[in-house]
Length: 247
Image 1 (cartoon, rainbow, N blue to C red):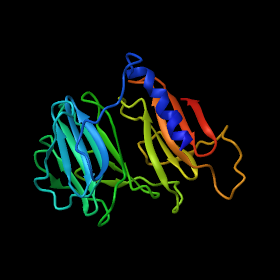
Image 2: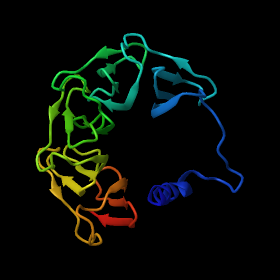
Image 3: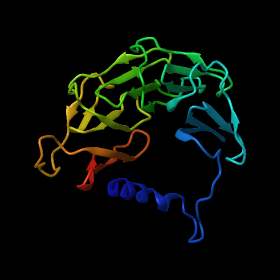
C-alpha cells in the first residue's frame, strides 16, 4: 500500500495549482467503480453490475450507456485511436470483450482470438493518428494480448512469461512510435518487450535480493517521457519502495 501512495504523490505537482486545491465528489455514487478513461471532454466509467456511464460536463452529470451490452460487469476500459484519428472504446466484462466506435452510444462483441470468457484487467494503447495504433491487454495472470484493429480481434503475446505469473500492470515508453518499449509489472519482477510483445525479457538488475522463494511483486508502474524520446520508468515494489530506470 505504501508503494502505491508514493507513486501517486509523484503526479500531484503536475496538476495542483494552489494549496487550496482539493478533491470533491463528482460522479455516480454507490456500487463498485472499476476503470475510467477520457476522450477529449468526455469521461467513460466502468462499473460492476451497472455497465458504462458517460459524462460530457466534467462529471457534473452521468448517464448510463449500455446499448448492445449483454453483461454489465465491467472489468476494464481502454481507448485507442486509428490512423484517421477515429477513436474506439474497448471494455471487458465477465462474458467477454466489447467495442464501441461511436463514443459509447452502442457496443458490439469483439472476442476473436480470445478464449471464451476471458477477463481482461488492463488495457494499454500505443500509437497515435500518425502511427500504427496498437491495443494491448492483460488478463492479470500470465496472458498478454495484442490488437491491431482497435480491439476487434486479438492475438496472444506471452513468450517468456511463467505460466503462473500474475501481471499487475502494463506500461510503455515512447508510446507514439511504431515499436514502443512495453513494460509488465508482475509477481516475478519486471519484464520488458521491444518487439510489440512478441518476446519478453526480465529486467531486474538493481532490484533488492529477495529472501523469499519468488521475485519481488512489482505492483505499480509509471513512465515519464513522450513522443519518440527515451523515458524514465518508475517501479513500485511491494515492501521495498520505488525504483527508477532510464530507458
